[in-house]
Every structure is written in structure tokens, then in C-alpha cells.
Image (cartoon, rainbow, N blue to C red; front, side):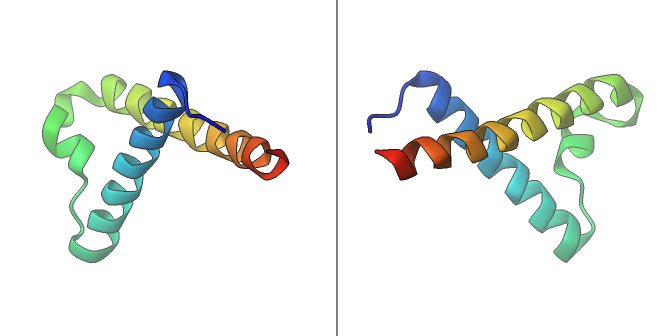
Length: 68
């Protein structure tokens, strides 16, 4: 199976999310909040939602890989 642009974008977002969770767990540093600041709370929630959707898409992509 060949990955298209949407697959790569979702994969990159999931990796960014994983790094953010790792930093949060190990160092108590929220990278998204650090980049966008506390005043951009709505933007941070949108980014977290997009990363969450990318994670859900990765589940779908894994089922496609399993069938291929």
C-alpha cells in the first residue's frame, strides 16, 4: 500500500501528538500551549482536536494496511 499526502499528514500529526504527550508526562511541558501561549486557548483546543482526529484516522489506516 502506498501512502498518500493525507496519510502522511495524519502520521506526522500523530507523531507530534506523541511527542507532546511524552514531554507532558516526563517534563510537565505542554508543547502546544508553549508555542501558542495561554491566550490562544481556542487555537490549542482546535489543534488538539485535529491531532485526535489524525489518531482516529491512523486506526483506519492500520486496518487498510492489514488488508493489503
